[in-house]
Image (tube, rainbow, N blue to C red; front, top):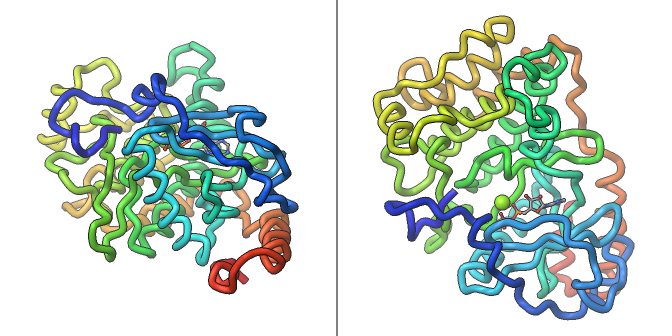
Length: 336
Ligand SMILES: Nc1ncnc2c1ncn2[C@@H]1O[C@H](COP(=O)(O)OP(=O)(O)O)[C@@H](O)[C@H]1O
Ligand SMILES: [Mg+2]
């Protein structure tokens, strides 16, 4: 993933840029006392559990985290963008997108707490070994099929509300306590129906559709293809080739072989359909990808969960807390 201002030069991931950055000075979170956001005097009393190129993520309690911006104009711009996107999504919750519990606190965003990223989980599963032999077990492929389905549903959901993620990848897909995948990180995303809200970032080269300068539905889907490929192989396409070579191959519509997925045709079809998006043999929407993968998920008897009671309880708790403190305008943003 690269910031849009650095698209044509060498890659500069959000992750690497954040290493030398400090977060903006957080304010006290006393005003956020509620069933979801426990009291604490400073966010720095909280445990840091994750960081990327725009934000630091701290554990608030077992159910929630707070994401605060790094100190830079880009960090502040990015968290404002993410805030706007979560305001839109909070009215339309999905099982496959991280739930924002409070988008209005000035220190940052309160989000449902997940246990880690899909990429992190894949690394654990591979534990240093080579990808295919270890991960290509039936169990691992069942899991990848479920993740792929959930990622496609998540992407279809945000696209329905004119949001382009712009950095689709296993690093921005989180797993909840029950191992279900949720799309996350909208800090560089765009809103196609809103002026001046172009994407602030762009995909990693191995997830980037050729000739894409402004991310759109198609480029998100292309990147979803590479993410699903990573779910089944443990790595992005062509891990040993130089980025320029990868770009050249993608430009020629040459992609890694998927023959080893013969027994899991839906997964292979989904990856291929994403990489060929909007061309012959390709899909035209993320919903097509989800429909293709639904076959695998249903065949394997994997339960497609509805929104859990727990999330409903969190939202109910917030509504009650908000009644005491928030403005009527803010209350309107809570899903019923
Ligand atoms: N809701 C969450 N629950 C648990 N960990 C999270 C959550 N959101 C983010 N993280 C962790 O923080 C890291 C950075 O978050 P992310 O939203 O991707 O920030 P950035 O915009 O800086 O890339 C993630 O890779 C993940 O490890
Ligand atoms: Mg991220």
